[in-house]
Image (cartoon, rainbow, N blue to C red; front, side, top):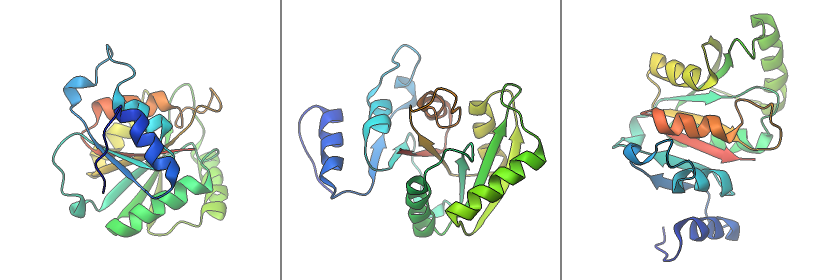
Length: 190
């Protein structure tokens, strides 16, 4: 661990570029994460860090986290993101709950979702997991509701801005989950 001075975002991002750090842990207060402050420090750190970021808004005993919800579209998640998440899963000895959120605008059948997951698993080679398709009004609500339903202590998401159609990987969804979920949020930028 290291304490540095300077503009927070730039210092953190610069430190991760050096390559000596494998994870950034950021504490924040929910009260500051409002729609009036769209580009808060935590959100910028999530988007620009080259290593995974854990965003924590309340006191959590991370050793007690035994369920991780990993929200993914199953089609655009890089191996790097899953490898980084696997390291965290192993450290926590937690079960991974891979969730594909179905919404009215982005709906696929259970069979299509299972086929997508089978292709995903061929590449990613996950262990200690379950796969679920969860239906909700929005991706953000689906992620939050599913995590709450299973009592997960951590939500994981890969984020990028490469393609506007990548709903679960869009940083706006991660930011909305950050603002509204009591769980720890783990993000990894691709």
